[in-house]
Length: 178
Ligand SMILES: [Zn+2]
Ligand SMILES: [Zn+2]
Image (cartoon, rainbow, N blue to C red; front, side, top):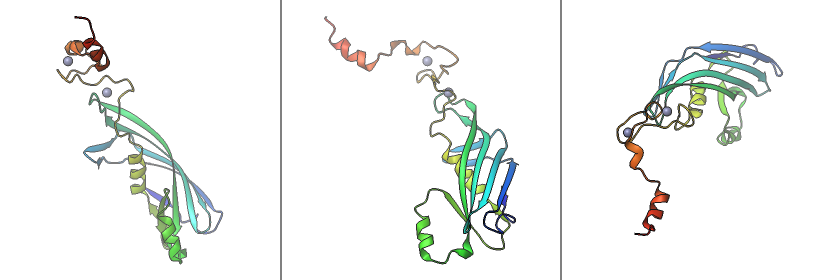
């Protein structure tokens, strides 16, 4: 995914709007794989603010995730606002400019005078990863798998759970008169 900055970089105050869509191939994320069920769409608004180009964007896609409880795959739509800063590398002269950057949370990219396109595929992947839940759930009340027989409790009602006693109630049981 590449942003065209050829026009907007020419002078301060210039703006540029762009819509893009790209099919992303799956990529690894820890033990998991991020799989896309739909292309990644971005809408971006670029503003030349002098020493940097500010990118305000919105990213939409649909991932195919696996539920952490029942292990079934499900569709996970994403709609994420994001910000990038593109800085003209040739205008950074003082070392303090580089030091200050370490503090920032906004993604910063540098471009040189000759560059008219900036590849932001990696930044887009990072934005997606930051927004994938640690424990994705197919639905908030997913009942998960039975630890005894492995049945998907969303689909079947197995009988394994009947002996289970709430630990709070178990304490009370000890106090029962004999
Ligand atoms: Zn589930
Ligand atoms: Zn069971």
